[in-house]
Image (tube, rainbow, N blue to C red; front, side, top):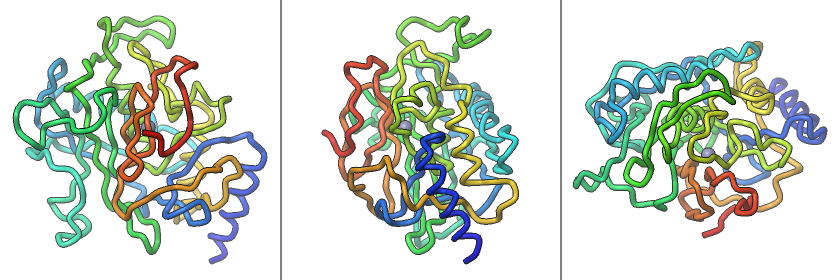
Amino acid sequence: MKIILLSLYGSILLCASSVSAYQCTFNGDINGTSVGWFERDVVMQVSNVNGREISAADLQGISAAAAQSWTDVPCSDMSLRIGEMVNDIRVGFDWVKGIGARENKNIIVFRNGNGQSVDEWLRSTSEYAITSVTWIKSNGRIVDTDIEINNVNTAYDHCDVSSEDIYTCESGTADLQSILTHEMGHVLGLDHPTDSSNRESTMWASAGLNEVKKRSLEQDDTDGICFLYAAEETLPGQCTVNAERVEPAVFTLTRSNGGCSQSQKIDIVISWLILLLSSSNRIRRRRGDT
Ligand SMILES: [Zn+2]
């Protein structure tokens, strides 16, 4: 209990100061606790389904690079790793099978729309990807996460990057490593920041095509991950109050917190976290828009 109270105190200070505007994913509503992994070694596995432009083998390597960005943060001891490739395309959590069951792997999978119903992209055509997060309501413990990549409506590339300003991408493509780095922030329990001073952060809810800057974490991102998984703490930090969060949240026990896209289309029940086209005049930060 003492740890929780201290964490709450820290949360208030951080949010009130506006120095850090990261957002945690909340367990219920703004007055509830946030969610997080109780483990500090989280493994995701890539499905063996090839994408249209990028193979499953390359997805494996790109995912590992994206995960490493979060693992490398010095003030956090969270380790996000990519395990062996799996022959599985199912997402979600089977409560009957339970935590750690084979059916409840954390997978990363392309959705190609190749005719199988599970392979269709039923959400907005302008969304890049969606991350589904499942947690235990009573304590906020994340037990499963899955990333689905919209390769039906978005062409992907692994851009050749020398720096954030010097890089080469296929025209009209999204950089898969950038998108996955963002989605993995959701995997770890982060939400989109709402303070416009954090537009350059990886977790900002906007991204353009041919953009690679989300590969590298900004201060806001590292502040968030270190608050959730500080190296000296056992339990995840609790963001229970956030002065910048003004709209009520809509949650279900198992919900999606991804749907990162180029437009503002959001499903109010399933998802309210999106990745928007980075044209400022199209950006709205309202949650629950459709
Ligand atoms: Zn997002």
